Length: 479
Ligand code: C2O
Image 1 (tube, helix red, strand yellow):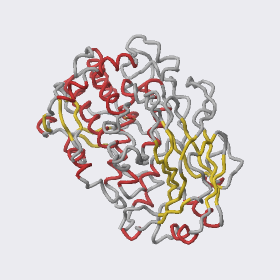
Image 2 (tube, helix red, strand yellow):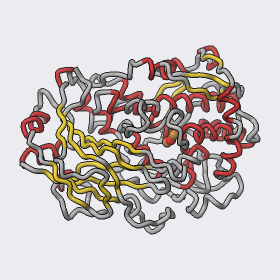
Image 3 (spheres, rainbow, N blue to C red):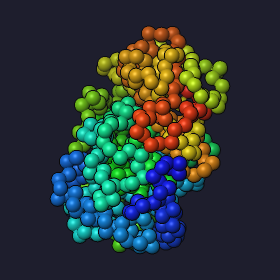
Image 4 (cartoon, helix red, strand yellow):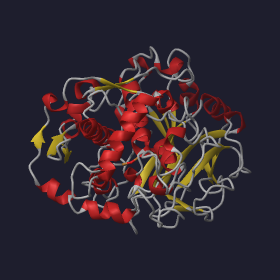
């Protein structure tokens, strides 16, 4: 982000936004060319194993670093250079045109999977090592702090000098970075997000986008804005972990599966391959990771969600939406904790959601939120806690419901509206069921949680502008 100390100050191998803008010039040329169709022969038949960054041994790290150095040394005009690779992210993720934009919708997971796969091929080709695999950063379980392999100085090609966080002294805020609970989503709508059909309507991103946004924000610098994020090699470890969540979810008995709509399956993404030639790939080409040459070392669901995602039958289907009362004015601006009444007449359905033999998830929907164009913000939601503020503990026993984080697109003046969703903890559902009327307090926390060392731009609490709040019991779309 422009205001951060490091990013305007190019030094050594630290790339900046200007570099990526220069490399982007080549992208439209690529887009105009007819893409060669994907075939397995192009990627070879090795299935490499993507490992958690802290379990990569020094030999594996050396190969990975050698490959990064080679790509980084190539000029931006070379389509197999680090800069040309980074430019693709700016083209597809920091863009006003919602026909091209791949965030905030069901294109988020497959586009980034294709992007990582093609970088993996470029890195393999650079060092002629078909077993090279991208590392992933599991910030929730294995490495809840900055991974040390990415720290140091510019002699380490995994380092990025623009980051706001240069050491591993602190853990990510556990609740804001939580993604394992999201594996409880059963439908693709909740997990992947919805299609972008009507650009005038708010988009519905999949649940993973919010913790993903927090993982961008935590290291910050280039990573803190979609315009520059892919310049930082850590971007790819972050996204490999998001990609791994998709791999985990795909194998769960509770998952209702990926979209089957041809608009998803056949959607074309054009990037470049390891030879720098345009290549066209679609979600249908990447649903099976082994078919494109990689798998993860671990796709077991984390222990805290295992009871929810194993053996839930289709009878858990059926949904009801509880609207907030009419006195919720549209386009509510919040600059301090504000209480929203949620008169939950449908007590019975909330209570039913807890039934052990037929559990349903309860989702808090904030519809039509406005995404800021220049600040990263997080909000926490509390139940019946009018006193809650940025320093309130995110403890479900104390009314904590969930959170949402947003990352700016890096396009000035662009404010898409999104519908943000959060799966509520069991404890909150129980507490809701006891009351005739429930109130939700929305607390901006993104910038006030900053510790002293944190170099992110400080700003007053950000106003939240949204159109509607509601609760859903169960997931629409299940038979
Ligand atoms: Cu396209 Cu994590 O961003």
